[in-house]
Image 1 (cartoon, protein in one colour):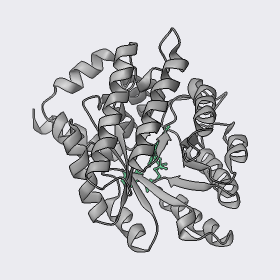
Image 2 (cartoon, rainbow, N blue to C red):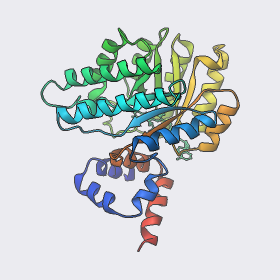
Image 3 (cartoon, helix red, strand yellow):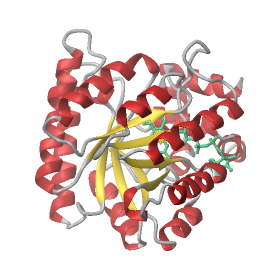
Image 4 (cartoon, rainbow, N blue to C red):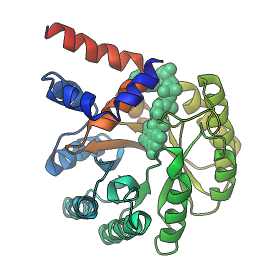
Length: 309
Ligand SMILES: Cc1cc2nc3c(=O)[nH]c(=O)nc-3n(C[C@H](O)[C@H](O)[C@H](O)COP(=O)(O)OP(=O)(O)OC[C@H]3O[C@@H](n4cnc5c(N)ncnc54)[C@H](O)[C@@H]3O)c2cc1C
């Protein structure tokens, strides 16, 4: 119930205005978001890299309304990638891109615009010597995102994609993508989806996540295990061992500000541990999805609201 309400609120302009105007919000958002500006994203990346972690940066933005805004987001990524190259961080930091932010939902030629913008970002990443991963959004975008990824991979074979274990289709997608050189981030999934396309309960989603992990770890690709769940992390490690995978043939990923001690533990044990680091002004949708995922995050937020009176 609460999760559904928060996910609905993440799409409500009225609630957005209320939350954005609320003074303590910014202090809480800082826990999950590096800051509004590029230099803050780069500074946070430097700190994470110095601690032995890798990074994937997300320039926050979704629900792009016109082609200029979409092109502006692509430009922001080009600037980010140039900054990673200049600061020598590109070996340890890549970028994550939401196709909706670069035009996928635009009513006229949305997919074409998103493909062109994503291509610009991939070219900038290739120039900087790093990679790009396409985030996955709600299930209405899965086919389109995978099709755009297929097209881009012809020129940029290192392009990563995300699969969401809660979708019933994902086992089949894992089989399709478990080939050599294929970088696949497997996560549980963060959107509100109907029962017709997605498993609903935690147990069913966890079982689906393990099935996806089994396929990806047994395959030839490069699995990116995106979860904070201790059970999933343990199972991923066991599956890597059973499949005689070297630690360099897969990685763990977690979100900025979530389980930082566990992030460090995994990195110190010799694993690649990549932190998903968002920055930018459009933090609202991202922040609300984090609240929806975990009641403790919400309690933290509500307590701050209450103490403000
Ligand atoms: C790197 C990364 C990239 C992602 N990209 C996408 C994407 O492209 N598309 C998409 O739909 N979703 C994405 N997600 C979000 C993902 O789908 C889940 O919504 C999110 O990760 C929560 O699921 P979970 O696996 O962590 O486990 P949950 O089922 O949420 O949590 C399981 C357990 O993990 C531990 N845990 C979880 N959160 C916390 C916390 N805040 N503090 C302490 N312990 C905690 C607790 O023990 C909890 O019981 C991404 C997640 C990560 C980590």
